[in-house]
Image (cartoon, rainbow over all chains, first blue to last red; front, side):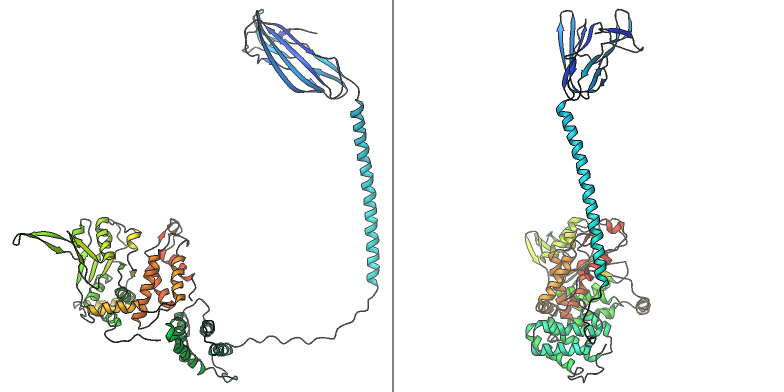
Length: 292
Length: 312
């Protein structure tokens, strides 16, 4: 086991370290695959130091670090640093840890030097029975599943082909279908004219003097002027202009019936109906009236 | 439509009398009469020389009331408006000298040129309809209306009226330039002759009776709801930072009733509300910065709000 192999380091500013011991040691020579072992790096310097940041660990091959621990101990003639690595071996063969090293000014030679420890080799035994058995079992299971999937796919494809074949054959057989007698198309629904709508709304209001019925009449009157809901009397009168005095009178009466004081609404409603009746006669006699 | 019992002088006669003096400005003249009937105060905004002052003088003359004009300036004091107590050497007593606010029609010319304490004195009087001078409280004569003018073109040296004070004006009327034909008529009529005011078309008692009568005009629930919807529609509208207050709804209902009364109607129609909404709402809205950033006019925002509320 090599100890303290100083070689010349590259010239740069290094700490002045008087290294008296530098070793690397494994706790066992052989280990099972996936087995855990430890490596202890011991550095002794003839100085008082709290840390040894200059220590560079060697590279690992076929093993990996699980944990590490540093222990510093002050001794009478210097400081001991012990770095303990816990490692796990990987595959059968050999696990190696290359030498750790420290670059420092060597006071003995008065120049920068690289101090290296020894390397470590640990034999990893042949494949462990349990692990290899599990690996073999996994591989067998994978192959089995693949085979089952292929067979199932073949069966599914065959099933689809058979189903398609039979369905196509069934379509080829003409089925006896009873054809229903032709139905005469319904006549298109007839839209009532505005005059008819006004007659209906006025009749409904005459039967029941409700607010709903009144507003229905007012809406139709507004519609005759060409304005929709949300418009006001002024909008309707503007659209109407001077062209229909009866409609104008009906609009004004409808406004009073809708928004006037309660005792006066009946009379206003009567005036509105009277204005409407001068133009809207029952039984289609209103041909041409308010047919906008 | 149903008409109000037309006994006595009708307010339309006053509007017609003013219209004989003022060429054009029909909407502004009608708004002044409506505010008089509703018992409110009016803010008139328009360029100089568009007959704002003349319209106020014509209104006062037509109802036979006293008219006082106060030119608001930066050095005006509250006592210049309300009045003060001075020592009379002959009687060796302090006597009360009433200010120009004690009149039926008070024209506060360029109201935004006086500092806040003077504006407050005026607006407090508008609200309370009385003023305290020394230890004595004096009621204003009835009817009492303040017609304040503002010039929108010249903003230098002005003190903007806060929203809380603007809210006390029943309506804000924008007095626009006359049309070409109207301007020609103005030159023809007043180019060589002095302005003649028609006086005493109605009496002060008539005006008080109109104010009482307008309060009896019927307001249907659906029209009331339309008023409330319009006012509420200003809150949260695009570009509007602060919408109109419930006082605006009261003002709109009051002005709509006055409009129905002026038209000899017993009830308010949705048209009354919709037509008067801009005058009642335009000075009660505060707009946010996007209005300027997007180069949008306040009137168009108000128009959109009104158009967005369907009439009953």
